[in-house]
Image (cartoon, rainbow, N blue to C red; front, side, top):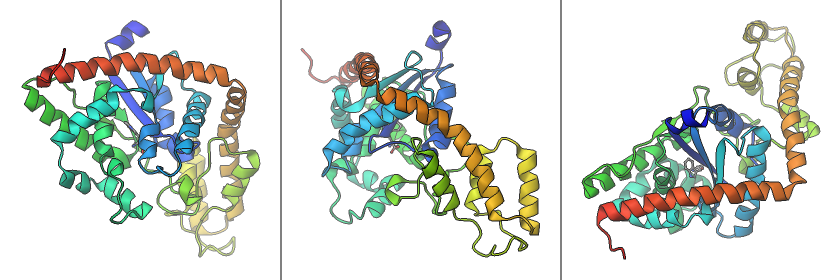
Length: 338
Ligand code: TRP
């Protein structure tokens, strides 16, 4: 297995450590990563330094998040024997690479990054954009290239980050006159992003429309029952809309019985199928998916020493990989070295 993996592609991806992960992360990326760890050399980055770029007023939150996200990884089935889990702020080569890359990217280009633009709008930074935040695409390029990643499994919103990373890669390689860095490819899941339970485009903890992977049975029930359906579907006998109906969007993601699901959709559209029936079905699917995750997470919470050991070991491995890349880049650019 390991021999086979040593010749295969390298994966690096990560999450900002701002709190526990939710179902949107699971569908968009975590589920994929659990599969990929069997066939690829995979690194997962607990991106606490990136989390700080828009949480400067609460650094302790980014620190607590390291443990929370690590618990989520382990609870969904990331196996630390197959995947290296590491802490971003403990990898000194990353900010060094970031500082180098910032010389090869313009402020205008950073400002044009569509993800950054949207995040600036959402966070209401307006003109008071923290410089660290504006520059985080260069830091993310450092994350990706330091591990020489070929593949980056992420949600669709991260595609501009990979594009910008590759621009930096090409710029550095041109400067170095050789391919010292590797271009990466985004691996975006075919299913669209999971909407929030309120029907808003994105599930997000800060919007209060998310279902955490650690949600209790009651929280799952309440979230499903509050879900946005079709506002014009008032009586059971009324015809209902499937398009834009959050319960059906979730059933598409979590219900494996596609034949039965199609039948339900037809009945709903025709009229005669109540919201409660589809909500109960969805709740059942989510309880089945999340109960073992929650239980495993709880066990791990009680074994803090084990989790910390996983992070310590993973970070040590990651340190040697990323330091080696930093040295190579410095040498390739012809910078001063003793
Ligand atoms: N920007 C990513 C997010 O907000 C997190 C992240 C940090 C990341 N570094 C990364 C993702 C490197 C992929 C690769 O979810």
